Amino acid sequence: MPETLLAKRTRLAAYTTLKVGGEAELWEVNSTAELREASSEPFRVLGAGSNLLISDEGVKERVVKLGKSFNNLEDFSSSGEVWLGAATPLPGLVRRAASAGLSGWEGLLGIPAVLGGAIAMNAGTRYGCIADTLQEVELMVGGEIVRLFADELKLSYRHSELPQSAIITRAKFKLSSSSPETVEALLAKVDAARKGQPKIKSAGCAFKNPEPDSAGRLIDEAGLKGLRVGDAMVSLEHGNFIVNLGQASATDVLKLIDMIRSRVKTPLALEWQLWGFGEAGNG
Ligand SMILES: Cc1cc2nc3c(=O)[nH]c(=O)nc-3n(C[C@H](O)[C@H](O)[C@H](O)COP(=O)(O)OP(=O)(O)OC[C@H]3O[C@@H](n4cnc5c(N)ncnc54)[C@H](O)[C@@H]3O)c2cc1C
Image (cartoon, rainbow, N blue to C red; front, side, top):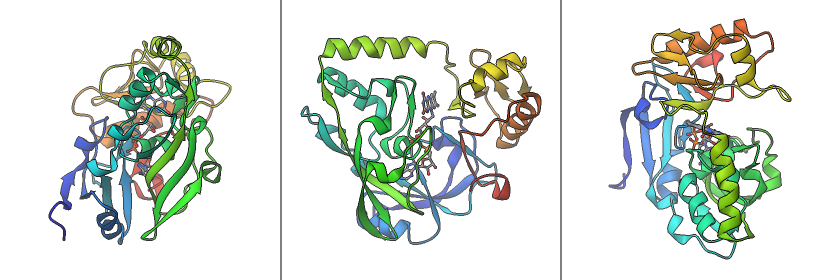
């Protein structure tokens, strides 16, 4: 096994923004060869862990995380067309584009993802989503590297149709020329829209908006802000955020989700990806 390849039992809570989740075998990979080896057995891909609820029992599959060599923020070009590694963090990219006077990522401000996770979830806000600028993706599927055009992923609201067991390794984007001032003005708007969001541990919006309505509004209307199971609580600031006040377990969070669903009349689909819950989740 190459020296850099980390494959050890690890508590996944530390790798998620909600800080919940049990153990798995974590494989941190830094080359295509390592990725091929790590994904030769059943696996899941971990991005920045900002949209995940992982079971207290952890997951039985390997968990593959793309390491530093899949983060090439330094290659960011000012031409507007750029290939970037899937482990590149979104927040730095949004800022880098702004200072280069490139427009297209302003709506992604404040999303704590890496590119692979942002593409898999088609992350975005009402000001824009990753699909707006995505041109092509490079994926590892069954040990082989393949390329797909963005429209082949059928990106829609917080959804993508990646080939089965695909790992995004790189992606090509096209931004448009603007001026730093114009980009900054839109960033300020997006930032202002985020002001009401909690600053404590969470995994972003728990539920998809049952459009045209908003899950947060429905949860608020049902009087559920502040509802609590253990250290898991419906945020007082934003009804669609479940926050971890300290020692919340996945069991607490799931109980809270069930309570919310039973008290809101409109059916609410989870935006979060569930790992390790067997038939109950998507894992
Ligand atoms: C404070 C906060 C605010 C947020 N605000 C927003 C928001 O405004 N809009 C929004 O859309 N989301 C938001 N989110 C949710 C989250 O950031 C997004 O869903 C994001 O796209 C998840 O990316 P990630 O890298 O953390 O992926 P993870 O949570 O690690 O994984 C999510 C999914 O992507 C898959 N995945 C990850 N990497 C790859 C890869 N390389 N190849 C294939 N599949 C992969 C995983 O297997 C999993 O199914 C917020 C979260 C937080 C904590």
